[in-house]
Image 1 (cartoon, one colour):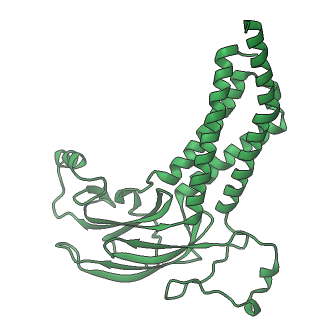
Image 2 (cartoon, rainbow, N blue to C red; image 1 turned 60 degrees about the horizontal axis):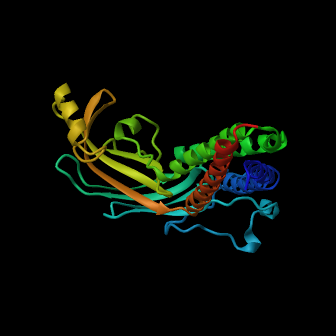
Image 3 (cartoon, one colour; image 1 turned 30 degrees about the vertical axis):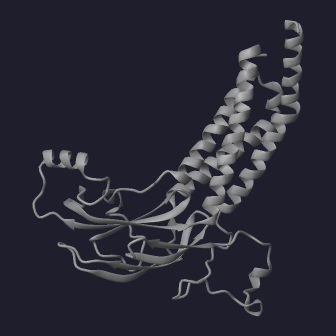
Length: 309
């Protein structure tokens, strides 16, 4: 086959890519993203279904449904159970989009050399919902990706852009999707010094020796519970530097400064719970990343073989 024939075949394939495959891929990405975004957006009512003492949602019978329930169907809050392997924390939280709108947690923290045994119940109240930071980041990146897709289709940039410009657009889409995926997978656990001094997530407020953080890890909802104690003698700078090298990140032995005082972490326990929205979103975003990567590879082949239009 002559070079002219090869060039003509490449041109025809690229024309088909612009006219058929790329628009179809963009529409598929847009449809999946819209569904993912919808699952992360809180319901319009923002109301939560109460959780009773057993950790179950209290459901109404059809005859007792509130009048507004007859309106159009909207995303419903979902329940996730949080529990630690050691049995130190157990409870149920209710999520509405990117917020925890209700929760009941039982803490059973064993006695240590510096802290007494702690056992108490605490709630997350609907009046003070907890925003999940990583879920907000996931939602932001999915919305940016969707906006990029809609603008590209609206202005017919698939037909007017050069190969290099299209490659740049696809690379940007893939980058946003990777960021969304990372926020669902990579642990967002903060150190105790980043959490102390902030408004408590729980009601009533836990003792000062108990620091909590809610985050996402491996497509699961998670809570970290730090048991801390104030140091009797403040460490020197060399001791602080050495501690950073040898102590686990936020784990036992970690020392830090907060509220004008020095503290030591006596115990870290983490509890996790399955969350169907996070797991579904991770699978969908992973599939979209792979699809965007395949299209990016195809465009790169055309760019290398034929150059810019």
